[in-house]
Amino acid sequence: MQGFYSRMMHMNATGNLCYIDAHLHLQDEKLRPRLGSVLERAKEAHVAAMLCNGTDPADWPFVVDLANRNSAILPFAGLHPWRIETAAENWASELEKTLQTNVCGVGEIGLDFAKAIDKPMQRDALAAQLELAVRFGRPASIHCVKAWGELVESLKQAGPLPAGFMVHAFNGSVEVGRRLIAMGGYVSFNALSLTDNRRAKTKQLLMSLPPERILFETESPFGLNEMVTYVPRKPQTPNEPANLPMIVAEAACLIGRDANTFAVNIYENASRFIEPLRKAKT
Image 1 (cartoon, rainbow, N blue to C red):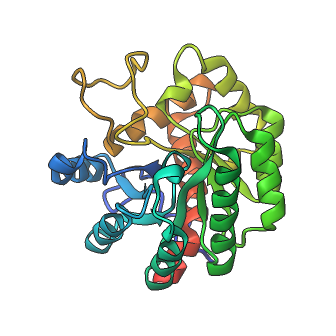
Image 2: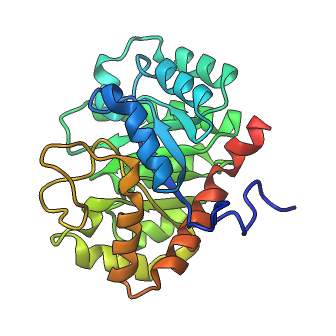
């Protein structure tokens, strides 16, 4: 059976390449005051879909409402590891209700051992949310910093995720990337992946991992700093989804791929990842 996105859908009606932003936070205060113009610029840049990740119960309703008002936005709801220690005790039941009443993925969830956040609490929260992803058949968007072994173990314990998962802003090793992909995952890269201090490693990852499991994201409004010289912008302005085509083109240049062909391949990868959400909506 052909997927929701056919292989011809990488072009829009005017023949332009399309893009899917695999991870961002449109609900963030840095973007809310200018959200209308941000979304208009994304449309002009042919960003056809944006995976908007909630990070705690306070922003899940806004993310869901935003997606209900704009079909290009696909909502995810999850408890970010940075929010675990301050979340209300009933966060898990609230997340379950959100998934019951809305078609959304599970994210942003994960582990961050670079932060001074209780590790057992992080593990328990991740396990609870992976269980929900399995039970509801929703894709998961995962954050991981300095906890790769723990993440792999958590995914093993959760069992296969029927709708898959992605690890955003991937910065692990080739071996870890291969293990995650073997478990049904995708790995995503952003503008910071292509800065001088990470360029060589990202090139190795892009050339060593299965190309059909690679995604790209902006992580708006984050994911840019002064080292990102190939995305022109005014100082102190937040990142936004309209920057995605430049990020994908820079990655293609890094590994010596034709930019258009590479963009089409990345679009098809993201289309497969979001297929469970699209199917659930129809």
